[in-house]
Length: 467
Image (cartoon, rainbow, N blue to C red; front, side):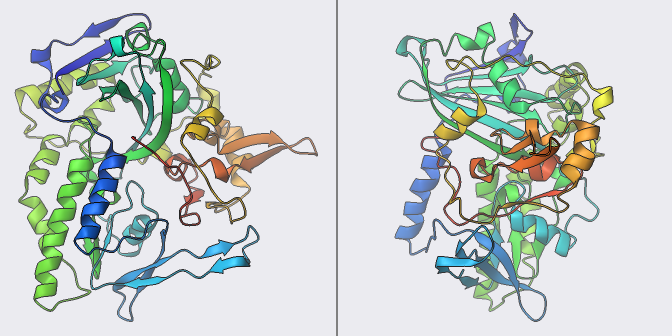
């Protein structure tokens, strides 16, 4: 990174924050812009060279417990199950993987992590977890518009001042630019579409100039945890622990969590190494949370703990108070703000909301969802049970449609959910599970908490080269 820019956007203009006023959390000079997907592939090779076994294409689908109630491992999902739930000719039963300690590192809103937090009551006494959805594209732009090492963040338009969100734009190598938009999932207007807000953002004069004559080459989306220190659950339970974004290790003020995930994994590994060396197994790795509290990671998250609560109070108030918190107090203000609501509780009724008219995509700078799914390289075997499960199939039409205009149609960034007209002329809720990029937004934002994301058949989902 050679240059940081932070812009406040209005509909037609922008204001650059002077560099000396940038809080440290927005200063990236000397850091590196890389592809996380490529880094993980490289790390996988290093691990395998050390004798670590990696099972790509197999998803952990079930938690296994021993007779004492401790976690003893996981089972991978069955392969070759048809849409009707019955084995096909290609059926292959999942494998049980047993361990002295099992680390759960599924990322934000992990399918099994959610179950563990409920089973062991790991969230007792902590704030609700809050989230954002990050939507990202990779572009190849004209060489004369590329500035290697430039990092741009923005706040403001197209979101209104009461809705948390902002953008990032990273100039990488080989004329590549990674551009993305994060919208806090505590937004209140059921007509808001994070995907459409991102497309609209790219049309701003200060942003679109980078993409003129360029080509979009990849697309993806993922929810991120944003609750910070106040929302971290208890990290350990008999037989295992939570690490990375499965626990909520992410610095929302920097929109960065990879370093947090790596450090939490290192701390947990050191704790497990000592336990196994001492002949222990299937108990609580209590030294892991103890070492976390003594680490630089705790200090960093402690300094960032008030960022998201302040920004949830609106762009102007939030910016002022974050400036005081980060610049004046260095993140060590003598107060800690708390999250009061889960994101599924924040939508207002459609009768109290203003519909948002989004422009049609032009296919050059802005795009529809289906073309975006295509370049995410998403692939699912269509003859498998739907992995997006409704606890009550009647709720989308009977409750969410009349109250909230069924917001799943808009918060999903790939068009999984639609309200269509059935043969009898009545509305019907349709799930296009083959489009799913596994962002977990539906699992988080559905106001009735009626949608459970579960693992599809192993190997299914997006494939993100260079993302």
